[in-house]
Image (cartoon, rainbow, N blue to C red; front, side, top):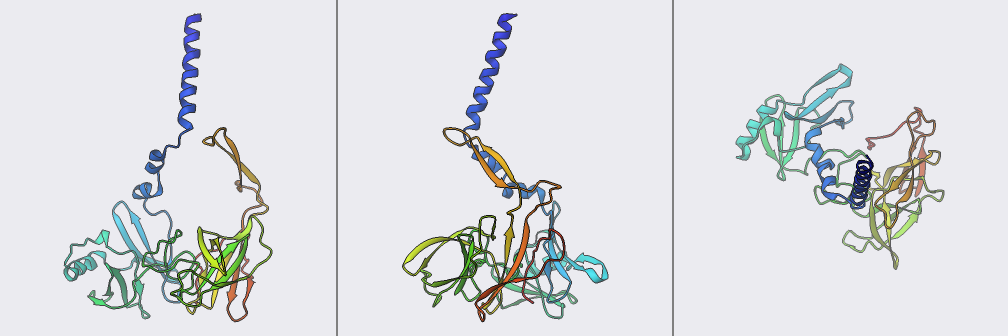
Length: 323
């Protein structure tokens, strides 16, 4: 009996030692296995991102599932939801015109654009624009800028959160004219402007727009970019904003999480000993959650002003765009 107990104790210690040794090494291969890119092939669409049609309440969205993807059209006033077009007919026309096989549930584009009368849609395949007549179901090649979906911050999507654009355009913090840009430093917002587009060094004089920024009361930063301000080069937090088409104004969100309580996690991979990390996290049912504020800036006034957009308790804002 004593020998059996001793063997059990030794086995327990061996398991604990092996487990401790395993958790001290980051398993990147396992992380990649459960990454968003991998799981996305099995989860498909889980939310709807409405793409508004002209200045109406109607919108289209792309929906992905195991059977393929579909473009859907929604008219809230008439309570209508239907396919935006006949996918199989369009695929057949695109196959004939583009000289490549295309199937209806795997169309080689992710965005469409309705014309003013909503009689045709335009889309882009391999840098070539096509126009599809919704009534006659005829397809033809047309010229124009690449058709892209709107970002969640409004306006055309001109790059992802890490600065890698899908059509070689600047990302959210940079204005459409490629001259003005927005960033955050010390929790406060700044706007700068280059003298010319060819100035790769981004040598500009920046203007500070806020002075009351503190930790957890800040603008939504995305990643980092190095700007040369005068003779000093510093790394700033880039901020996603919604620019007007003339690059003279923008809208920006501000997050207030100062009243949210702390939560903790133990970093078991820290060397030589685990460390305690603290962050803000609102638990279900708690009164204090993140609050969102909306601001706008105009070049004419040079000031950042708050928009009285509060209507619902603990509301969030999305799909901001200029009308």
